[in-house]
Image: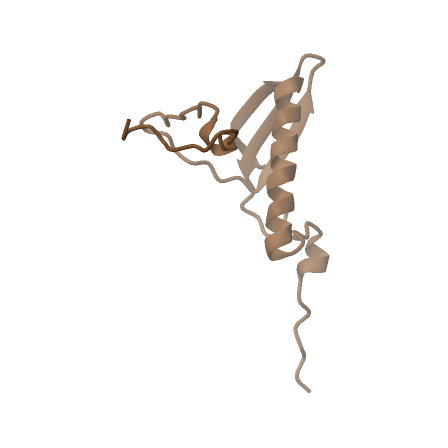
Length: 115
């Protein structure tokens, strides 16, 4: 009897004791991270196509083609789950660190000119 917890009569099992099984994610060997500063979204009636690449040119430079390095094709159900997950993560990030400003002109700090 020493191995059983001492619960008083009428006490409920705490919610933490009833846990859902956690899905374990195993990363494949040789998985390489991808960095992209360019994304293009296109689609078909059955699927959404996300192309990712690296845009090496700075803003305002002579336009050069962006080389697409990765393509992700998902159905619209998965796309919506991804959209909701990304939105939740962005919202938490902005609550912690402030708004993520995507307009470059609003991010640029004007430099002072000396007289």
